[in-house]
Amino acid sequence: MSSKQRHAPSLILEHISRSRSDKPVVVLGIDEVGLGAIAGPIVAAAVAFQDDVLLLPTEVRDSKILKYERREALVGPIEAAAIVIGVGYALPAEVDKFGTSRAHDMAIIRAFREAKKKYTGGKRLVCVVDGRNLHNRLRDYLGKEAAVFADRADQKSYSVAAASIIAKVTRDEIMQQCAKVFPGYNLEKNVAHFF
Image 1 (cartoon, one colour):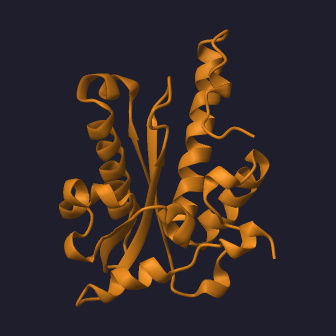
Image 2 (cartoon, one colour):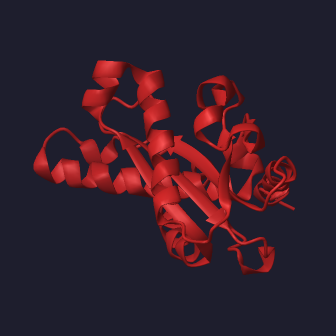
């Protein structure tokens, strides 16, 4: 068994989040990319799936361990299996104005709100978020007591790993478009964990 197979994410954190709520909920996995990049936005994605793991693409992993082509190939199956996907951005001007931490939080909250706006199922949305240290800053925005904040959630949680792929591919596409507008800066290569 390879290390990638041993470290396959599961739905355990999603089940923990559900167990913290006294009402039925849909659990969004949230992750971001672009934090600390020298150019481009911070992009966050929020992804929720049905409870039926048989319908989920089995190759989903944290975007950092997947090659570019694999991430691209997984977007379609993730979108097909997801109940809802939301994407949020913090633009470079917002990073400059508010600082990295606040802009990071803004992107995550925007992804959550976008998913909430799109979701029509009637259940409350709560989150599993990559980053235990975000609990105090974001808990009230992302499902209150039912939200789970965990370090390396992108490696542990299936929905967070899927969110990391959506966020990464979205940001890569933005940087490729920026490279066309601003040639000569190699912006298409300003992508984190580029393979």
